[in-house]
Length: 572
Image (tube, rainbow, N blue to C red):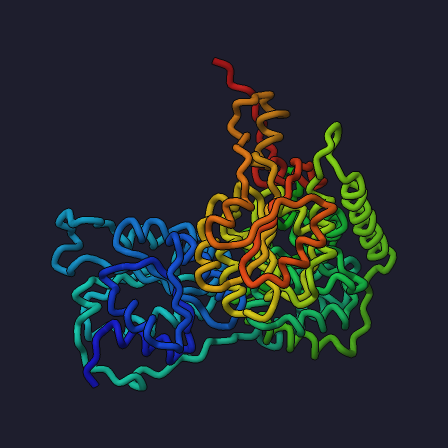
């Protein structure tokens, strides 16, 4: 059958049940835009900035077992999209990035065409695979390969560059001529599984870590079963939030360092750590000298789909290449009849430390305002919001200090109900994430809690929400500053001109200008305003004035991320 490359692309997307496409107009991909917008199969949405298109595609990969597609125009469109794709890369989320290009004969080497850019070089470091379709008769092969690479192994973005003459080119192709390849789900051999079982059965202070790989492999139920079987201390990473319900008896909190002092104690004192689908990034207080050095004699078992991840951040007793869900199935079957030797007194101490930490952050919330002010503190704001969020809601948390307090109080019942982008530490993903969540779940509440700095990064996407009927509820923690940098400017450098102070943006008015509803709220008026927002037929922004509030785990940034580097003032 003769067809254009643009048409073949859309047919291959449908073949793989990829239906969510986010973009800004790109004339060189006009036929893709025309086909996608005419076909009711696709959710085809134009955003107000290419970065948001990347973030929305990223969210699709977190919320579903599928992947999203994003594209922008040549040159500036491709460069604008980079932050959204980079965040997905850091979170190991599959998505397909398309960049159009000028006619083939004018690129590589370029002829200084308008908007010319080296798209392959731009995307090489933040994608698993980046390629140009140079010949129309190879287009189908390369599209199929890109989709397979994105989904297999450690998932991630892939990039295809399509010159305009290739996109309109006609070629013979039969869709079934390239069969789909099943995603491999490797498992360890019997000898390796027996070693894991032996280490866990004989451990005195074992700890279980659920990473984002558990969520991506649909292994949530299996990890919960493992916690039920063993009763071991259990925690989850930022990408694993929601895997372990917070009412589990051996739950020590989740979110790495933001899980709090109980999880830190557990990970620092454990004799055996079993991590499944966890990279041991900066968030995890294991082997992060000088604050958290490697513990002598501690044995770490790392299970990951990607061989290159094993042992990269921590020394291992065992490193196993395996699909998280399939590994957990085998492990649970092997452990069901076992008797464990774990120290119950130690576990009780860990859980007591976690309980004291929960009291510590609740005590801060109880103060309501920050010291020597009458301004609402972020702990009180986050706790109040946590009591309003419906059980079936999808929660998105963006921002810096807002993120810390949000993670401290918001419940996550499942990884697909709680969205964050921890890998890149991005600001501004929140509203695009929330828009994507509402697109997929029109009948469920979607609540975004964000800081004023993060909101201004992608706030224009309120127009996308209003235009597309995505009735998201956004609550802005508005402190008119780059909150995380306030201690740097005021305490570390005693410099009021450090750059942390911002203008007070009237987010309620901004929301109205985009066709949304907006209200300025206080802690007292928040419940009624939130209930109105739940019933609204438009997106709603609630502007809540707060003051920067120190978090008990703030030391993490200087102590772990900066490895205790000492800063000092620089005087002219």
